[in-house]
Length: 164
Length: 261
Image 1 (cartoon, rainbow over the protein chains, first blue to last red):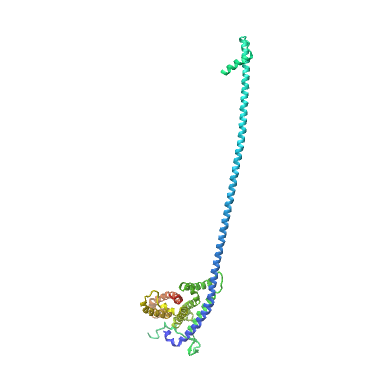
Image 2 (spheres, rainbow over the protein chains, first blue to last red; image 1 turned 60 degrees about the vertical axis):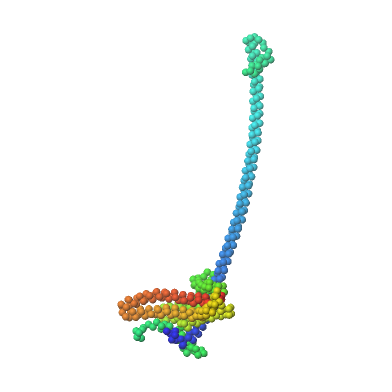
C-alpha cells in the first residue's frame, strides 16, 4: 500500500503541494470567480423579479383603465337610455295631444252634422205638414166640396201626425 | 503468488513518483513535484478553465455558463439549507472543496492509460484527504470558538440532557466530535482507493483469465469485463457522491459551529 509505504518520504511534498494548489483554487476560483458568478445569477434574478413587477404594474394599470372605461361606458349607456326614454315619453304625449285634438274636431263636426240633420228633418216635417194640409184642403174641396181653411187643415194634419 | 505471474499490481497505481526537484528540500522537508502534485495542478487548471466558461456574465446564459451557475447555485442552496443565511460566506470554501474533489475524482477515472498517460487520483491518498479534512475541521473550531467562545462546549451537551447524564454524554459527544476529521478524510480516501483497486483487480482477472486460455477467458474474463463496465459507471457516481458527502458534512459541521444546537 504506497499510501503507507511511502508516507515518510512523501507526506511533506503531498501536504505542501496540496496547500499551494488548493490555496490557489480557494483564492482564485473560490474567492475570485464564484462571487462574480453568483453576482451574475443574483443580477439576473433581480432583473427577472423587476421585469415581473413591471409586468404586474402594467397589468394593474390596464385593469384600472379597463375599469374606468367600463364605468364611463356604463354612464354613457345610461345617459343614452335616459335620452331615448325621454324622447319616447315626449312622442307619446304629443301623439296623445294630437289624437285628442282630432277627436274634438271630429266630435264637433259630428254634433254639427247631427244638428244639421235635425234641422233638415224639422224642415222636411214642416214641409210635409204644409203639403199634407194643402193636400187635405184640396181633397176636402174636391171630394166634399168643403172649403177648409188653411189653419184648420194644418191643425187637423198636426193632430193626425201626432197620432200617427 | 510468484512475481512473474503477477502482471497487474492493483496498488501500483497509488505509487507517488517524483517528477521534478527530487531533492528539493525546504527546512528539511522534501517537497518534490510528484505525479500527485501534477494531477492536483491539472485538477486546479481544469477547474479554473471550467469556471472561466462561467465568467461571461451574460444575462441569458449559454450552456457552459449555465453549468457553472448550476454548481454555484447547488453549493449556495446546500449551505443555505444546512447553515442558513450566515452560510453564504462559506460558499467560496465549500465550492472550492467540492469542485476540487469532484474534478480530482473524475479526472482520476479518465481512461487516459489507453494513450500512455496514467491518471493519478490524489484523493486516494489519506495525506491529501486528511489535510482537506483538517482544514474543514479547523474552520469549524476557529468559527466555533470565535463566535461562541467557551460556550462552544455546550455543543457537546445536547438540549434536554438530564443533569446527572452530562458527565457521561459530554465525553461521548466530545469523542464523536473529535473523530469527525478522521472519518471525513478516511471516507473519501477509502472510497476512492477501493474503487480503483476493484477496477484494477477485475482487469487483472480479464488479463490473467485470457492468459490462462480461451476457456478461462470466456468464463472469467468476459464476466469480469462486463462487471468492470458496470463498476466504471458506479465509480463515476461514487466520485460525485464522495465529493458531495465531503462538502455536505463540512457544511453540517460548520452549521454546528455557526448555530451550535
